[in-house]
Image (cartoon, one colour):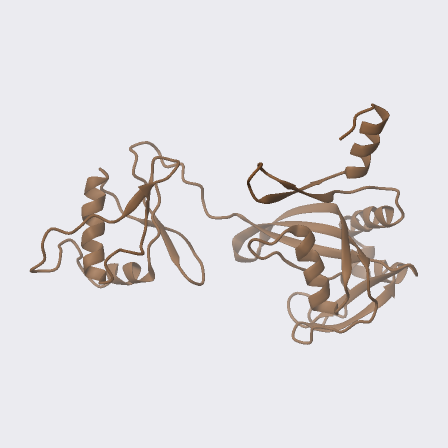
Length: 277
């Protein structure tokens, strides 16, 4: 179903015809490959020919063996590799497309004085606008939501904070690189209060009275932000409960995963019904 290939193959295919093995060579050896869970083949590149021409010859011979004659197509690229894919079965291709969404986090951090932690950015859409905003950022691959939002707050402002819950999930489209965006507005409890900004990205940061923050024209005139702030304040005042993180093993011997759900309401329901979990 899919193959992992190197940049060398992509470059070699642009140089000319690769339909024949290098002169003087014997029949090319088949590539070391294993079947995946979807009746496809995954090529193990560790013991593959290091010479590009030999690799292509082995690949072509392997494809004949795997009973399909079509071309690779580009699936996605990362900093260290380019992935090309190749559908072997004679059925329509059901290989999932590359990731369609990016995941962002936004931190609502309020102290006991009713002040919210806000920043002004040096770059991006808010650069030079004078708008104060909550700390935000994108999760990196392999990072959990609750860890990512704590990291972003620490990086941008120097403030240590504790994740409490996901209060709001915002879903929108036309994000950078033609992706869609899942943005999670999270409630955090500050554990420190002395600000030290990330000078490469942040112009300024401070604790601002919430009413002053919400009164900025960008937010005052937006039904979207009014609703988000209403939910955040309700969470801070314990009138609303969002999704807390619960770390749990996905299997008896497997790695831990994280569930996000309304723990308080679930516990109240179980207690009222005599369920002990």
